[in-house]
Image (cartoon, rainbow, N blue to C red; front, top):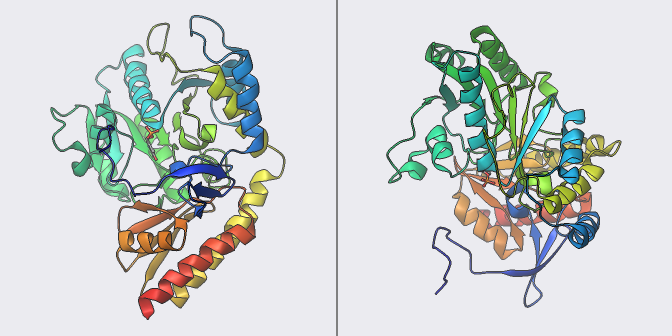
Length: 388
Ligand SMILES: *Cc1c(COP(=O)(O)O)cnc(C)c1O
């Protein structure tokens, strides 16, 4: 019996080594890993540049208090602000912390500008924002909130994709709208660029802050955060997962205006700005910010999308829809997603489930077309098994 609290239905398998796109078990079985620590190992497992950065930093300084200037964090924040809409960054340790911090920033902003009545945040159905109490009641997924009352107040929810209902839900108390540019857990549902633009317009019109939860999309869409192709930007953006290639780091990116209320003592995190995780994140940025990196993602992303769509066309009774952008992809299935995933796993391909009977595919951004083909071939094989 495990001594770990039983909150996960774990598969009876464990790994002793990871390298690039692959995971290896104790007895040498090799798996193609499209779970990627749930969209986290953006450059595959144990990328040498990240490993070296961790090794080097661990010999110099692992942790130091935020009572002092932390150069590794300062320079990481500078790189993030230089390359995004943001003017300021708050570092934390996870996605849910970045959401939780964003809620605080929104409330404090309106308090500071003398409009404390603006304190409610609108989310979309199907959203996932993490597992702390406020993030849970913000996303309002009944299967996650059940038994965890009393409810955290201050949140309203509207159906995904209904502009008119959203407009009606806005009132004098609305402070912010929070939206994932692609709903990950919700079933890899892409919010089209014109809708992101629409959200920006609504927010500007009603003096509402726009918050994007890019925890899962970061780097994977072939842009830095996941919304940049829309030509608009939020006031606040939550990031985590891929940012540290497996080391626990989260970040809140925000504009100078949105940061107005956050003065000394208004928020904190003991481990936030940790030099070791910042060094790992620097190593990730070295690679993804290199010239031509995202253009290259576009090329292999399109290859992957075309191949998945071809599979959908060849197996219309099994695959209903191909969703997602570049390296955050989903298949909406007509057969049971859990059954499909376990069949993929029998053929040594690891995938993640999502709502709406979907599976999620998170290949490393450095996957070669040969590795993509390997996974595609396994999906094809499993589709054929259903037919026979
Ligand atoms: C994973 C995820 C979170 C929560 O991140 P944790 O690091 O697990 O706390 C929040 N929002 C989105 C969109 C996510 O995908």
